[in-house]
Length: 386
Image 1 (spheres, helix red, strand yellow):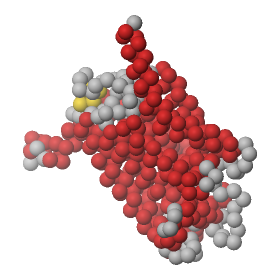
Image 2 (image 1 turned 180 degrees about the vertical axis):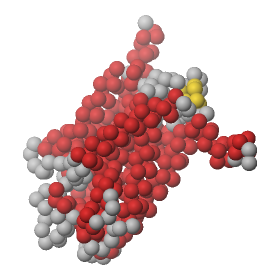
Image 3 (image 1 turned 135 degrees about the vertical axis):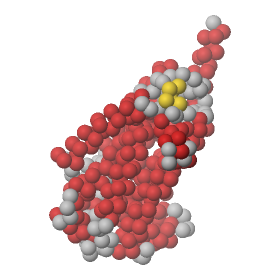
């Protein structure tokens, strides 16, 4: 088979169209690296997860011991486990930054509505996968976190209790719960990968956005070598950051109670989820009513789906929207505040702070973004008339 024959193969042509010759806006900055880094994180999580599953035992009497076996007896098992455990946090850091970049540069605006919505679906699937993965070590925080979070579904009228029993596979968080969580945690990353492929396909259908927010139909260059090399530089920096946690502080992002075997008879002093759930956990606790709190938690993610359809601004990039730029950075600070109070005990003043932060969170996404576009249009008309 000659080189020309190889180039005619459908797989080679597809790779060439989307990885080599794909026309890319020439002014993309390093902020666009995070989509590539998200894909790398997903690959790392799937590869290490499959390897760990070969040694893990999904049984309440053996799960914690099997994790210890991986750490102590399996060749480089400690490395696999630390990469996988910290990799979840790295994945969320990268994806949250990717979403923030999309908000800043208006990547949700027409014609990329489908790209944005698929991205939101991916983050929802990631959260479900990460939650089920957190249960698998069967430590104290795993057990009680699963108990608290699954019990939230009991707030659903009429069928809430049945949903909880279905999730549990019985009448309490037990062996059936652990087994089904393990099965779903193993399978869902492949579903995320499928949505990631759709996300990339939709992106390549309409082309990437760019820092100026102008049309992407001109001034383009090939993805290789310019942006491939740029992505590799970002990847090296990310690996250094990732490695610092894996080798020097592997337990910094975990809860110490999860290094104790699960005990249904001993409740931890303060039950908290992993750090990447804390902003949404704060929203849940900010609303006194249980059902409304659950709705607020879910809507904290679902609200992102509405942005392409409620956006009224004709300008995409925050470069040319000074007021929006200021309000955006207040929103980022607000998300950090929600994460901070989400890890605190639900008492004064943390409850009041979380309530104020929740109001701004939803206010920015559902009120400020659509109204600001109208205000900017009004200002633009006044300038034209003057």
